[in-house]
Length: 594
Image (cartoon, rainbow, N blue to C red):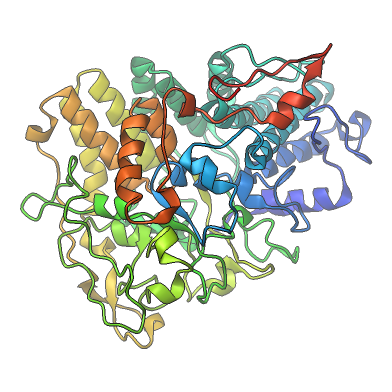
């Protein structure tokens, strides 16, 4: 079931102009025609402002796609497919070299602060912060609220503000802190904002209820999970471990369902099965909402469908050979190749036309591969076998593969696909935190604290779910009519087993296995670049990736990563220019970008 109330509600507000907006002068311009506090200072009014803050989660307000469908929403897509996945080496930009060329310098790490994508992301995220601050500023002036209502609204607003600042912190590091008490929004970026992010999530954890009347709203346990993630990014392993274990033991989703891994990995990426026991916090997406646009249906992902296919457009976001090879398993142990996974690569149809014969790879694979990556000769959901080159714009540039976690099913496209624009939208939610992520983050803290068997047991929970044969991709009953259903025969040679104590004998070995499991489980979900940076291995991993992948595809042949400079993206030059006060900019550029 889709919980779309917030999305539908905000649409009407946008159309009547009751929400404040943000301009290039970020955060300091009132919206023309916006309603004043005298109108909004009611229970209904403050809730509408709060819903406006939720609406900013999709990144499609200022700088992204607006309510009428204009703009380039992918520049601020909330799943960070450019900044987290492509820059993390899991996917190519895709399409061809001349399409969206501003992405190439970002993911090859030679981009300048003037790249407009950074400014779009900055503006869209600060728009969300502005909206949360408006809620918190108005809240004391609403006398009809009960104490519990006031705490709940403040908790939700501060959770959202914590999320927006977390996004900015992991991308740009030094960003200005602006809250509901800030009178002049032109503030310097000269302090570490982790303590303020912590405080927002701590407040939300202490004040939010465990359940909510609408699934889209943040609850106590989502705040706890995000607080733990904030600790983890700061290497506060004991604090993170304590709260992750509490979430695992007692956490429930907004509907009151105890957190648990779903039986089938693929159900996390099916719009018909969302908002479930594995959902900690999702950005809700809705198709066919009556707007005549795809603004409510994940327009940030609209480029990311196979080219020249039933999806029409546009051939971006192609998984890399490096990622595909990561899913190989040792046929004897069922475990991944942590060190040399790029040796003896998974066979692809690179350079083979769709009219030519091709037999897919027969070696042993982790079954999560074929729910993550579309590859030649393997069922692409119920759309038939992926045909290979005919669905790819330029194999030499982006490789032979297609994304899969964000692709809707043919049988349910009338419900969960939106064809209101030149490229599709979908009702597939964006996962900000799902329960598998919490389990793996907890495993990481256990390893850092020396609890290696506890760490192994947590990782094995993830692998045990992946081992469920009911969840394997199956072959078609009739290849000529794939919507007729699937057999019980696995679509490839799936071999996966649990770790044993032998692989978790040292902290180094345990962390290596945990890091790799995150790559497998969370692939193409926007985490990889930020994980590599916080693990302090980005330079090593990404330069090895450039060396390998750059010999296969042209998109990253010139890539090079240098730490610490490239650990963070540059502060947008436009924002530095706008921050000038008394002849000097308030915002300072990140080191190495001057």
